[in-house]
Image 1 (tube, one colour):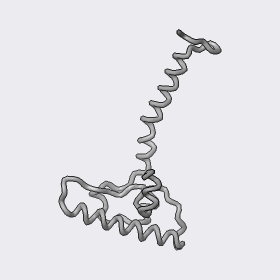
Image 2 (cartoon, one colour):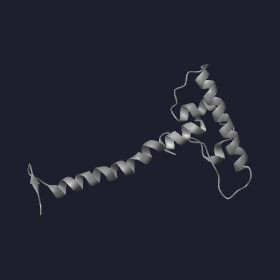
Image 3 (cartoon, rainbow, N blue to C red):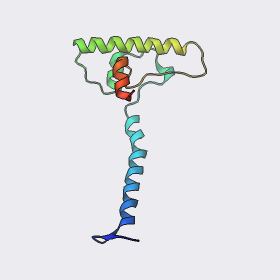
Amino acid sequence: MNWVVYGKSRRSDIFAMRVTALSAALLLPLAVAGQRGPAWHELEGYTFQKYVHDYGKSYTLGSAEYASREAIFIQELNRVRELNARGLSWKEGINERSDLTSEEQHKVLGL
C-alpha cells in the first residue's frame, strides 16, 4: 500500500530519510578528519601545545587543568612511542582522547 500525505508518498519520505542518514554517515569522517593529529611516524617532536591546537582543545595556559592534561598527554605520548619502538606489526598513535584519564576514557567510550 502506498500512503499519500500532503502530496508526498511514504516511500519518498523513507527514501529522503535514508539519503539524509547516508549523507551524514559519509560526511562525518570528513568533519573528524579536519581534526587530524599526527600519524604514528610523525610523533617525534610532537608537543602538547600542538595537540591542543590539532584537536581544538580549550585549556587555559598556566591553569591547573592545563598542567594536569599536559602531564596525562605526555605520559600517553611516551607510552605510545615506547610501544611503537618495539617493532611490532602494528602501531599506535595519538587521538582526541590522549589527554583523558582512564576513567574519563571509559566514560566517553561507554565502558
